[in-house]
Amino acid sequence: MALRLLPRTTRLAYRVARHVPRSAWPPPARFAYRAVRIAPHVLPHAPHVPHVPRTSAHLSGTAWRHWRHGGDLRISGAHPTDAVRPGEVERADRRFLLLGLLPLWVVPAVADWWMHRRTRIEHTSGTKESAVHALMMAEAGVPVVLGMVARVNPLVLTVMGGAAVVHGATAVYDVSLATGEREIRPIEQHIHSFLEVLPLAALAFTACLHPDQVRATLRGGPGPRDWRLLPKEHPLPAAYLAGIGAVITAGVVLPYAEELWRCRRAAREARETREARRTAETRETREA
Image (cartoon, rainbow, N blue to C red; front, side, top):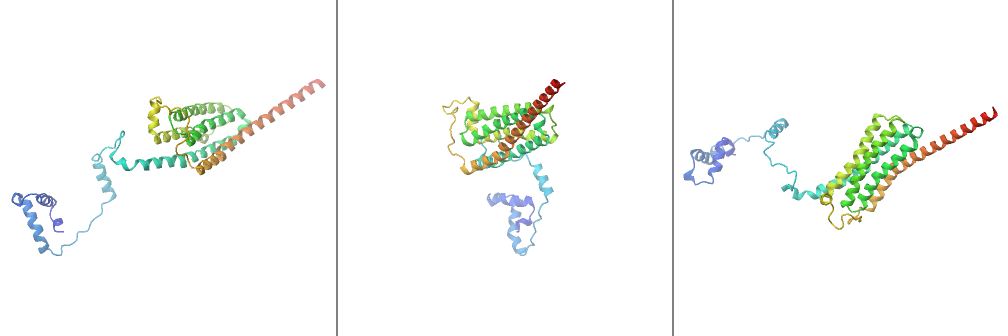
């Protein structure tokens, strides 16, 4: 308590002088020593100085004044504090990919199917566009299945990257096909943006979980097992595979199968109507 009553420079001098022989102490240190030794007797009941908490604005200003004083974060290579965290980061990455990204992929898929239904796709672009949608679902589904059941190696990563590129090209063709046939509202365009970026996001998370396989892929896969389709060493739980399969079936397979069936039925009805009309016109011509 007595040391706290002294000026800051005197306190610093006293702390430094404690490690130096008393004969070599400078005058401020000698004064601090005497003051500290005498103060408890002179001020036996020194008043307590309450701690005044700093405001958030003061703390923020102090933090920004000294923001370059800490050690820089290493962008490449290992960081000293990463020794206790890589497992936690990997688990968080895997949980977000398996429990967040993949299930939520169904949401924009269902929304896109609903927009197709509202614009009566069966009477506009019809079976051709619906078949393109089915192709896009297959382009997204194949890498998803490989990522869940197969060991991630250069072969699987190459298939995932190629499928993402082909999926994006097919999406461009899909929009160009539908533009002249039916109305594409702004909300549907935003839904398409989600559907186009999600395969790339899934590929990025998978690559972060397997950096060694990414490096092997960039080197051309020199290992003997790099280009083989192998099962996972530690497979995903059967309950998860069944659950995600049910979600994809209910949110992707069934809606787009219903869309394709609806388009084919409308095309068949339109063809029968044209044939009936042509038959009636031929009969009227003969009677005339």
